[in-house]
Length: 151
Image (cartoon, rainbow, N blue to C red; front, top):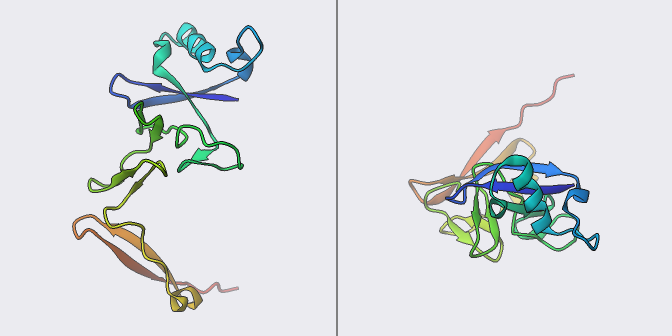
C-alpha cells in the first residue's frame, strides 16, 4: 500500500491517504511518486505537488523493518512537512524543544532523559518515569507504586 500526506500551503499535514501501489505505476511499470500525486489530484481535487509520499515504516529516521528510512518519519495529523530537509515532523511536544535533523526527531534542549539506575531497574515495588518539565527545563522523575495483583 502507498501512503501519501495531504499538506496545506503552510506545510501542515491535513490527512493521510492509503491507496493501491498499482495506481502509482509509470509507463514502465515502476512505482513513481509523481504518478501517485497526479492520481490523487485527479481523484481528490487537491494540487498534485501538495501530496507527499510517506513511509509507514519510518520513525526517527530509521526504517523499522531494516530498509531505507524515507523522509524521517511517517506523516501524522497535526505534524508538518519540512521540504528543505525532506522530513515529516510530528507535532512539537514542547515550546523549548529543538529539531535534530539527522535523527528526524524533537529533542529537549538538555538532551535525552536520564537513564535509570540499577536500583531503580531492580525495584519491583515501584515504576519510574521521566517527564519533561517545561517551566523548569528539566527531566523530573515520577515514582508510581506497583499495585500487587490479588488472585
